Length: 120
Image 1 (tube, rainbow, N blue to C red):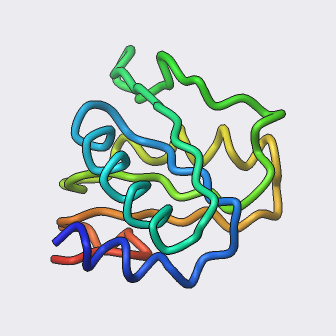
Image 2 (tube, rainbow, N blue to C red):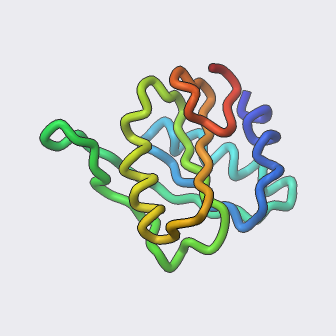
């Protein structure tokens, strides 16, 4: 399944920044980065952690900074049930580069929000 997801992402121009959402996204991101790297793509991996604060999702921790945003960004989720973690990450990225396309990848996408997925 991970091979299928990584294969779909080969169309992206590099460098590719993979932003892992929480623990499940981190595991998936490492595997995707390995496969994209084997295909000759330049890939960098980052973490984004979100928390629910006063009924609203917010970024609690990330190692992705504006100076690192040099290429194509893909937000990696293992499963998108309702997609609540994605909006604050997209907001952060749009503040850094307002007109840049942001991609989303997931193994299972129950909300049909992902640009790249295996199941939906």
